[in-house]
Amino acid sequence: MTVSAMSAKELHDKMNSGKSVFILDVRNPDDYNDWKIEHRNLVDVNIPYFDFLDDNEDMYNPLPKDTEIVIVCAKGGSAKMVAEMVDKRGYTTSYLEEGMLEWSQFYHTVTVVDEPKMKIIQVNRLAKGCLSYMVMSNGKAMVVDPGRHYEEYLKLAKEERVQITHIMDTHLHADHISGAPELAKQTGASYHISRSEMQGSDIIPYHALEDKQTFQIGDVDVKVMAIPTPGHTPGSVSFLVQDRYLLSGDTIFVGGLGRPDLGGKAREWAQSLYDTVFTHIENMNDDTLVLPTHYTDLREVNEQGIVGAKLGEIREKNQVMRTKDRELFTEMVAGTSGATPPNYDEILKINRGDVQVPLDVATELEIGPNRCAIHHS
Image 1: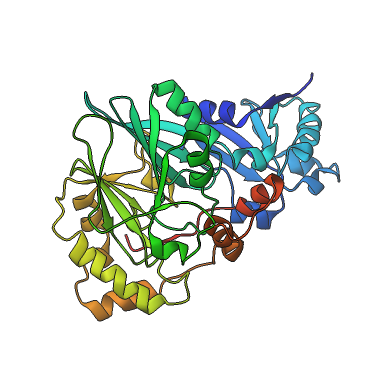
Image 2 (image 1 turned 120 degrees about the vertical axis):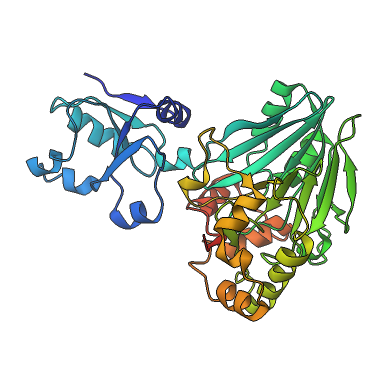
């Protein structure tokens, strides 16, 4: 029996159907432990490819006989070989055709808001935990924090029958390459980012976001207010849509806050983050829906598949957001860090326009999980 190849979309649809999916990941343990496919309906096991070459019967003990096994590797080749070996022993197998390379570039959309005058769609790049948004009204659209694969947003705009007029980056991204400049070229839309994030670079054309700047999307009254929310980066900006929806970039997450240590000024930026939490957003209504640009934990995805939470719920669950003592807040935030995002410096240079790389290099630079959050829930 010939094993079948499965696309990333087919795998995601299978997991989203509500049925349990069994994945056999045949990459080496270090790669698996650093970054893997995750889903609430997923059971997985890691058995390296080379172990199967020994033809040891014990390798097959963890594998179920009564369900399909989806085999995953880095780029598809090893998974196909293992799938054929496992298939010969009577198991039902398929494999992710282009492996984690394909999974890293898969985008999934979910509608967050669908009102008579406005619609907001969340675009989830699941492998990276990267979220972007399309805010639509009366045939016009604003895109916030688009990923590198700008074609996804052109396709979505076509499906929704809207014209993209504004493209925003909440900050200069360090863990993935922004699709905003290229999307602006493709659509003729204006690209907006804080001037301090670009550090004087004039290579990429952009409009500087200003304090309390308001944008009109469509002919109806959809106000998008730019709010400085420094802390993750000095020029971080959030967007408040209709006074109810906060597109918070990497400043506030469902389960934490943006890391202030990536610029090498952890305490200084933590002080800025304190001012953001207790000044800029202090008076925002608890019912404000926070829609971040990243997530790091499946628990941040609700039953509807949306990453988002009411501001009041985040405040209640997040200890650091209730810590009004400035010094203690600073210690809690500045003292919490993890591994720096891979290729951090190179990606910053690309997003600022200082460096250009070919497509295959860009793909490799982005491989791996999101590391832009700190958690204090």
